[in-house]
Image (cartoon, rainbow, N blue to C red; front, side, top):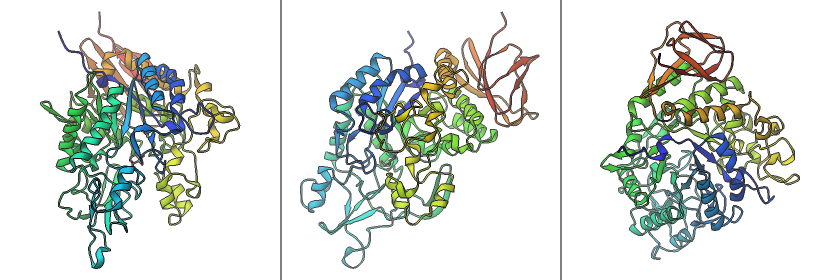
Length: 550
Ligand code: NOJ
């Protein structure tokens, strides 16, 4: 008997940013009970997995990505019991649950770091990456490694130890030292703690940075633009090292101690070769999936999407699966990338939900949420605060990318009333509600056949209902020279073929399709098929069944 494919091969991931999803107790901050209360929204939407950004104990300087206890919950989000309840409530509804595992660093207020920084000889002295400085009195950083934002050294001086510690992300997020066996054991145990509770997997925060060069060699200064990344320094000694790739396999062995196909999804950046290396080999597997971030910085053109899909199909052939992302809690909303053009956002929804692999949807994407302009001066986001004062506001607002991540983290818009259904009327939410919540919200879009929400819902239910869409192969149909702006691909399993056609220009287009094609749904009407010609309205996408003749 054939073994069924693991659940995650045909899932759709929905990212919840708990602080901004739903506030059940009226303190202006989203919480885990709020997530439980809205699980039915996810079921109705048709996603299969909910990934929660961190809700662990934290001083919230980076809103949860700075952790002080990996096995506890920040009180504003709930308790361990609420987590248990959330997992159970999700499972009862057939949803899988993924947590965010932040392996690379802790908060500088973590008891481990407090102890580590106190002397050079305490039992946790080597739990973090400490080095003597260079130059007279060791007052220069140990080497040239830059922090993730590149504007400053990754090293922070600690007067108590008269040494430097490494902080790849922000200064208050010291990097753990995975060359210390106790650190690895402690973090693997933290993962086991949640796996035992029943979590179905983890999204792995900046996983590519976990192990650095043990010889601490300088990184080369070589400016380069690579997909979504612009870098002055290349990072052979701090990112995607062979040791980090090997670590992926060790972590995989930990999740494989548990039944039920627990899944690891890496936030890693690099060339397709590098990304693929994290997946390991069939006899020595690594991560299950890695996010592919190219779509976060798309050019709204057929050739952009065609070339990326072609490349990913080549680089990640079955049984590997691409993991497409159009939005997340760090990057601009896609609606703003297309100048607020809803038809374009709808067209991209068709694309995302019909590609081969695992699509990821960020909360609010399903209703067409827009960025909420928030000045650097008012930012809560530590990255934005670090830019405040030296990047003028008018420049910050004109950049294609958001310097202030608050702008994409404002509360989920459940309804048009006061509090937007996110919090109790009269409560000031931790970040301002986007004013457009009066028009753009879940309540108004529910059952409105023309809404973004209904479009996502129909697409995702179609994906679940059609095997070719959730587990079929993908073949790009050769470009029709008469319609170069239309992207056409076919999804196929034995006995079922689905055709997807996406028109990326604002003029109606026609392409040749098999005679037996029947329209299943479209982002915009009217779509017609006659005499083997599919006519698509301007800026639209359509999904068709190719029905074999009787
Ligand atoms: C990547 C996360 O997506 C981001 O939100 C966070 O600030 C950094 N990692 C640091 O953990």
